Image 1 (spheres, rainbow, N blue to C red):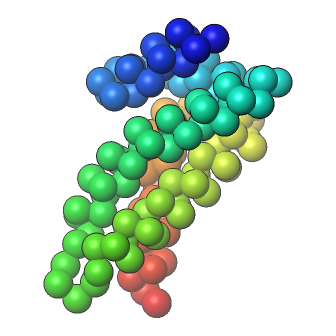
Image 2 (image 1 turned 180 degrees about the horizontal axis):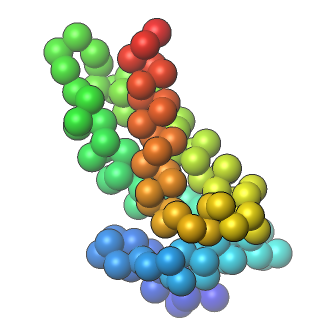
Amino acid sequence: MATLLFYFILQIMLGQLNAQGEQKLLNVILSENKSESKKARKHLEHMLEFLVASVVSKYANPSVSVNQLFKAGRDGMQKGIDKYIETWEDKKTKSFKLSTYITWWIKQEIELSLSD
């Protein structure tokens, strides 16, 4: 199982995780093995922080703290992962790549924090 997890992490790092790979990774996260599930989720979150940084860079301006934007982006990432996993069996989410879905949630949280 650890080898499979390493394979997914490597694919995420290289930006080569396709829809099939995402399904397998989510199956590891949803598995009965709690320790592997937690490890997979932590690694997924760590890899998606690069996505958060990328989105935050597009919203950065002198009037707003980058730390505030990054925190909002991470909150959006967490919410997006949770929602994606909750609705995994729903065909609506399966039509989106995980990164596309997460990007939408990150943007929503950042825009919400900017409007406050």
